[in-house]
Amino acid sequence: MARHFDNELRDLKFSLLAMAGQVEEMILLTHNSLMERSDADARRVNDLDKAVDELELRLDQACIDLLALRAPFASDLRLIASTLKIVPELERIGDHCTNIARRALILNPMPPLALGDGLRKLGEETLSMVRRAVDAFVNGDADLARAVIQADDSVDALYVDINRELLRLMLADPLTIERASHLIIVIKNWERIADQATNIAEEVLFIIGGVSVKHPYLQTPPDQA
Amino acid sequence: MQAGDTMTDVEPRQGAPRKTEVPLTDTAVLSAKPLLHIEDVSLFYGPKQALFNIDLEVREHSVMSLIGPSGCGKSTLLRCINRMNDLIPNVRIQGSVKVGDDDIYDPAVDVINLRKRMGMVFQKSNPFPKSIYENVAYGLRIQGVKDRAVLDEAVERSLIASGLWDEVKDRLKESGLGLSGGQQQRLCIARAMAVRPEVLLMDEPCSALDPLATSRIEELIFELKRDYTIVIVTHNMQQAARVSDFTAFFWMGKLIETGLTEMLFTNPRVRMTEDYISGRFG
Image (cartoon, rainbow over all chains, first blue to last red; front, side):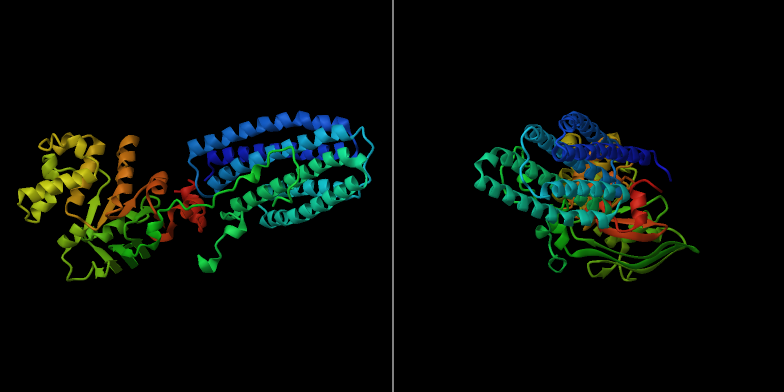
């Protein structure tokens, strides 16, 4: 039996996807602002952040309305509850992009540091994680969500490598300290975006399976349940 | 997972520790022993089979909700528990229903005594055309209790337990029919409790009540489970979710799924349960 509620849930998903699309664009522009040293892209990131914030408010209200008016159960409840948690993750990604773009505007006029390819890889891998987390949500793809969660380890490793590289540069040449300090903040923000993608993937697994996969160290092994 | 610490110009969202999930279920019921054992119960109205091989256990001091679309057999099963189906012609029951170790369909069982152990509250409140006092004392009187002090104690205890005492203590001699719908239903609950049953069976006890009266009955159910084991039939999904520890979903006379209420309403194992509680069919 088709329900009016199904249309409302479909609208909710579309709105979440619209927000995710805006955030993906912000990530792409953020990456360009650093890699292509584009001030225009950095400023565009800042402009888009407002739209993402507005979508956050709209989606929050939509979720509260559906909870109050439809009293959902089972998969409907999981979808709405998880949307309420995914929305702030996306909004936070937008904030991290804004932070990076702000640093890009400071760094771009300065000579580039002699860094390896890690920074580019970090941005690309993080963007890929967010995209795949959103795809997993759209398609209800548990395997893809699990792959996103696993990918976080490689982003963490990249972050640690770049951090070390920047420390080496600063130790070797004090003139790099200002730029390296900004870049340390940049990579920290990329790393946090990857964490947020992981959180989204965890919510996708909850929507699909109804079981939280967060903090596996706190989960009781089945033989001790 | 967050990588190693370093300076940052953002507030780390995940810095605060998260609490582990705490189940909403009253944890005491998880370790309670089963009181009602319904084993392989089938019921026939003449040639028509209404229940099919039902296996269900209800734990002591827990609330079990029976849900499902009209005609699914939930009220029929409820009436099996106090043998009220015996009153219907051409009913045939197979399987066993036990309270503790006592098989209630044992031919030696005294049905009147059995029904004292199983208080029942119906969809429509049905106070007798007697005073409030006499409504509550009725069960004890037909058991032969005449001692006024015993009756007084039972009436007060039952009205307090049903949350009605403060509202009626000054007019116990007035007719029970003069109470509001919600009060009449609580009077019926008090009447059922006066004979100290082990189990309270409730057949849609709030379906004729307004939200406020419904809320009072639901709060009462929550209180009563300290002393009673409760089985409630309800069409109201939110009510089942609010009041019960366990829920059983029936469809066409079959038990489709049973389990902890919080699990059944957030993550049912069977698609049919999901579709029913989400309003996709029924």
